Amino acid sequence: MRWLKTPVFWLFLVITISLSYSWMSPQISAPNERSRIYLTMAVVDSGTLSLNEQIDKYGTPFDIAKRDGHFYSDKAPGSSFLAVPAFALYRLLGGSDSIEKALIFMRLFVMVPFTLLGLVFLRKTLLGIGIRESIANRTTVAYALGTSVFHYGAAFYGHALVASAALGAALGIQRGLSSENPRARFCWRVFAGFSGGMAFAIEYQAALICVGIAIAYLSVREHRTITAVLAPALGASVSVGATLVYNIFAFGGPFKTSYNFLFYNYSEEVHSKGLYGITLPSAESVYGLLFSPSRGIILCAPLVFVGILALGAMWRHTRWLAIYIGFCAATFFLMAAGSSVWFGGWSFGPRLLVPIFGLTAIAAAAGLEELSDRPLLSTLAHAYIAAGIAYNTLVTTAFPELPPRITNPLQTVALPLFERGKPSPNLGMALLGLEGSASVIPLALLIVAVIGYFLYQRATPDRPPLWRRSIVAVSAVAVLFGTFVYEYPESDSAKSSQKFVKFLSSRRIDPK
Image (cartoon, rainbow, N blue to C red; front, side, top):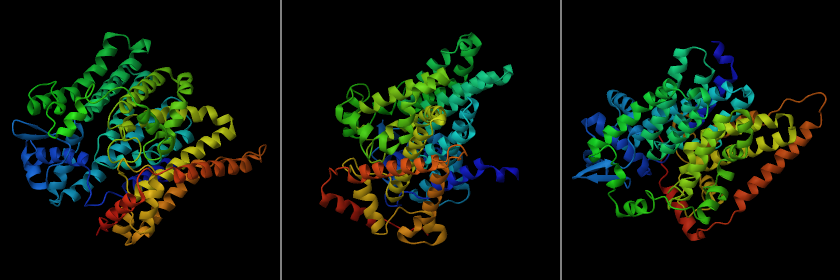
């Protein structure tokens, strides 16, 4: 039972509880989730890839494709296939036929475990490249709770799964380089390729991550041999091959995808522009993805922004990782900014960028490591990242998927919902019998403890003023961050915003 005394056990326990704590109201589910779970249900219940039976029973979601009279998911199949064992167990245990309860099961027993696996990959990669354990632990916590992963890591989407796969590839390459055992080195390289292939199988756009893996991998001299190249190629062939086979059965050819058979005209119009809906970035999208309190990385994902700023530190520390992270971050940002739906539909934070959040967390850790001997700058960076933890948990536990017209999530939606006593359904309601806004108090206490841990720095006898400066620095960051996200102009009208909050309040059903 020694593991009970280790800090990392308690950190992961807190993260697990936090990720699982709240969820979408049963009467509100995302088309993205439904499209994925429909395919999982079709495979388990009917042994087919067609979603006709699920659509007849539960309704037609927006994210759908149709070919030869049969409906299919418009998503890559990887996430749905990953959920098959869990959903088969759900059926075996006599799980309810309710789509809402099935989705909650998928969130808790598919998404949360795979997100935690990604956190393990992140932490082990950081320790493997020589990042101090204290910084590795803080970075892991901030990635899980201080970015959009706090919601998407427990929602049946593909983005957080891709992020975990991208981190798996990083760990595979790192362990392959550090291992002295030829067999272990080969297996880790296969694992790196398999992880990259899984990223593609979960989201077609993750082909960019596969390219980043290849470029970073070949930037290391010892990887430029036939055996070294064949290992990751062998790993990638499994998941990529399975995806191509799925395309054959569902859409008539290995290189035909759901995008060729989108059901709704709007979806078809969006994806017909440029390259599958990607054109040149606009000023609006670049500004929104950077500065918006509802979609921008600077406020919604401070750890990610620190990671981008720290790419130079990453280059000085581990060059192949800097290449991998830099390529993926740049290409994903350009892809998201070039999309006509750069805001990611109903969401909070830059949803389309979540796949690269784990990689940028590695760079952020390298930056925090370099700042270790500069206490004031280190404190400012930690306080800024901690503000992201507070902001993400506050908005997400109120309502995590905001319409694009909402530009000030805190003042317009989150605080009004808490004032009405209508946060999202959560464990406080289900397990402790707490009502209204009081139900989030247990999570709030956990988050306060996490932020305290995150900001804690050991005092040294020769630097007693450090604490005073730290308090001033943390207070300044908190005031500036809080003021900006609270006072940011709301583009939606007061009448429309009030109507939306009233609508959400009427959809709040306390879990039993």
